[in-house]
Amino acid sequence: MNLLKKYILGTFFSLFLLCHFAIAQNDPTTTLNLHKCFPYIEKLPDQTLMIAPPQNSKTNHKTYILPATPATTQWGVFNNQQIPVLSINPGDTVSIETMAASDNQVVPGTPIEEVVRMNNAVPGRGPHTITGPIYIQNAEPGDVLKIHFNKIIPRSYASNNNVPGKGLFPEEFPKGQIKYFYLDVKNMTMQFAPGIVIPLAPFPGLIAVAHGEKGNFDTIPPGPFGGNMDLREMKEGTTLYLPVFVKGALLWTGDSHAGQGNGEINLTAIETAYEEFNITIDLMKQKQLTWPRVETPTAWITVGYDKNLNKALDILKKETIKLIMEQNDISQEQAKKIMYATWNCPISEVVNGVKGVYCIIPKKGEKQDSFLLAKTDSPSQYITYAKDNDVENAMKKASMEMLNRISVEKSISRIDTYSLLSLTMDCRIAPHQKGEKEVHCMMDKSLWVA
Image (tube, rainbow, N blue to C red; front, side, top):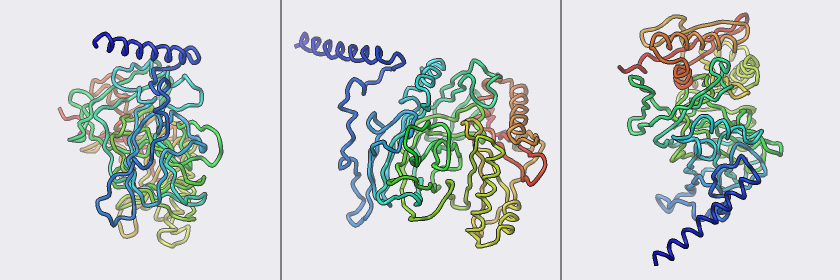
């Protein structure tokens, strides 16, 4: 019997190695992917076996479980011809599992050189592994998905990848590095280094509907479809509104974050995967929307994205004025005055090719003054400040000043400081009507616990 077991296992392993060798011969960049050698697990899942039992028999909506498997994920591209892995009705809930980047291969033990190799293996392919797409019945172009984030549970580890040649300061860190972290999901904290503790604030770095055009689209640049927005306000309890461009909408998510700074300057956040991203998806018929919006219990959030950060700011202003007009039934000039009176506009990211900014607008009846942007330290924050006719140059100046300062004052290597700033620094644009643009960057002193 023992000899038979050894023979079976030996034969199985030999066949697997032959399969992997054959794949590698055809594609020298291939990595060890079990599903390529076992195609039966690539079959689409049986949706009838993905339904969770309801709490009571009277409920009209279903809850589905969508695991992250080779059959339910794709690596680095959106395509509106992708066969849906799940079909739901508006009002249904989906408990989604996600993977880490590069088909779950950016995990503790993987060096930065391997990350770079995987990133460069296929031109036009992003690093993100995305779960989906989910088909929403009755969704048509011109409609809007209303997606409520019920629950986010990250896994217990994460990475921050400073990829060579990427980020806001690629020339400063030509070698790059990768850091791995343990996530204390019970206390929702992460030890960055001895004496430095970062509070966790999970949010999906990427959540998208399909593009209106056919073909493969890199998952890196965000746009009107959502995507890699890196918008840290999209936390548990918020609601995202996405315009629909194709029948069924086709919804994906990935690039799961446990936290991020406003700016994400070294390219990445606290990069993890989710054991559960629980969302309820509703449909708003013929509710015209140009760009994504986010709703929190007390505020609305508008966004602007463009390759040029100055143009992104222009888009943001237009979207903000439009929302204030809609919510308050007032004129454009009145809305503009409210926008500047309550101005609170961070920079979401400057590293995805298409850069992002957003504004937090108080709901009607909620009081919010303009966010105080100081130029010198406060009792609770380190603060740097810069101005320039180009808002991205102002961002670079303020960020570099913070990097130099924290590295020296806290005796942290420059590359580790770069990583820390990407995870925690909060950069915001001052109210701007004409002249130079101001950027203020802040870091909480409470990060240093010893």
